Length: 421
Image (tube, rainbow, N blue to C red; front, side, top):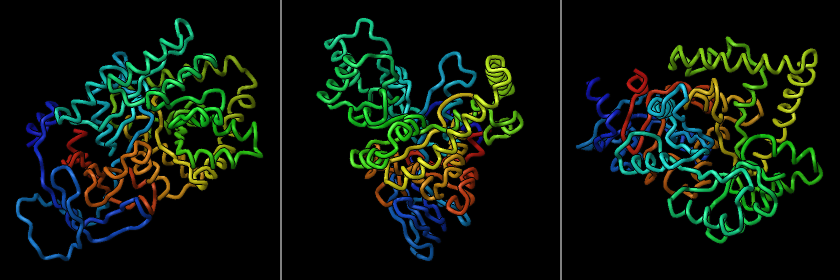
């Protein structure tokens, strides 16, 4: 059985399954409710039926999985993913496997390239077992050789090659930025990424999402009187926000080495990866201390902590105002693929979000962002069976999201134990 599973996973071949998740507790996420004692029928990659466990009808042709004491939630969506390059200590196949093992069934690649398009298409065709992928096209970060015509060609080319959106990183002047926005609107091609000058300017430009925590904080600091209006503008225009807190908390140097090494998922990476991550962390820490000397605490540690404290209040306000919030730990050291999502959830909890709000940010909100909420993102009849089976209730404690029993991807079940062997 073990050999068969490895072959199926590595070769990308999987057989269609008709499943019954027997006596499972459903957390649908489209509403803040818990539905106990359910039988969930999965067929042809979708949720076919949800009925009471007490139903006596016997359905032939289904594999039954006893889910007594278990909880079913939508699969997680990492909305600011960076796929490993050839020099990364974690290779692509391991990256995808770890994400799936952690319950991530959707990845938004924020440093897209042609190879990601081929991978995405292989996943769609069922030739590769991996989370579903949305791929960005990285817009050039320098004005050199950029003209109105060349920008138009870039946007048209990206769309024709079936990238999902333009990722704006920065570095271009106002004229070229305006050409870019004009072209994206003309070609009906989404743009997302780093804020251009300010959050209000990015809202005005029609970004579909703004990345990282700083634009929200800066918007308040520059114009606190109009901050509520800015949040309302984001809500009305459907502009999402993905703060990627875990990355910045790591490089604020607030965590001792021991805490970083004990993060969930670290037990699944190699000694080489741990060693490289520790070296990068300690080199960055030393460089910062050498630069700031006696002012390290006042000008670095204290500054970051003050920023985070202020941001948390603004972030909770944004969620309360109805801003569409996404979730991702970003890339980088000690953000183990997939498992880093749990660390980001803890930081959302520290900001005062409810467990339900956090779960929604990590699931349904991503589907809403892609205008795919009728297809996936919640546990409902007719939705795609990209699901996460847990051994404890995340609405009672968000850290229960770590207690993964297995992941369902396109209706096929993969136990975490098998994925991590």
